[in-house]
Length: 231
Image 1 (tube, rainbow, N blue to C red):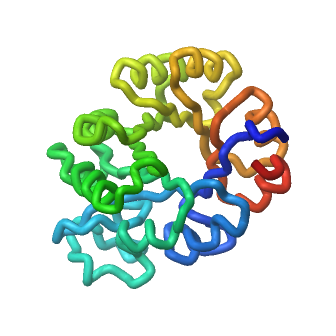
Image 2: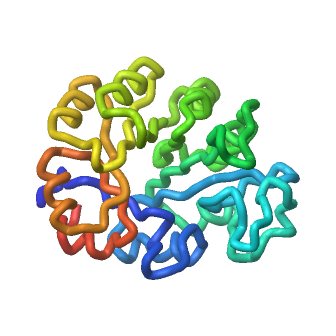
Image 3: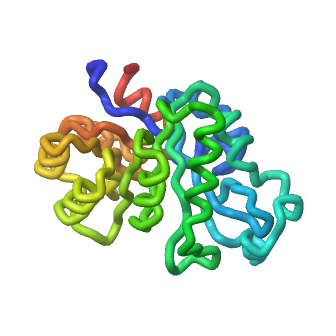
């Protein structure tokens, strides 16, 4: 691969080698070949932002109903997670879907994420993404210089790209099944990058790289490095 090869983005950290969305998974990602880390941000009852994919813990307790101190030690705060990522690019996916137990139409979690990034002055290597477009629109309104990404699964690629462009988002994050060469070309013409998820199959990595995607989110960054080569 050339130096134009896609970014390798470790999905929830190095999540096959280590438990996902944990400090150890984030710390291991770079050494395993990742250029970037993707992680999930949610809010707690006392206003902390923590990193966890689901809105509930494995024991069924809802995260937004618990204070930070009531969560297991394995659930890091966003601050601890960002520290563990070191100098890697970080994609913070805000979890704030209308069907989630912790859905917040006031977008307080978006505000808290923006505040954390601003306090660290790491916006140049931070991407904030969300499936819920009003949430990511709020991030962009609060921090116009921060790169925002529109995640999508149920919209076709052309529709999602049109929404991303209309709302000023610089990245599109489609499920890989929506990614075609035509979509990538159209996105690039519109000035929008394309990072696709979640790809662990080596042959699919090669195909997506060949059509020009900008980043590949994967659970196996070490495999991606072997397949795609160094950047």
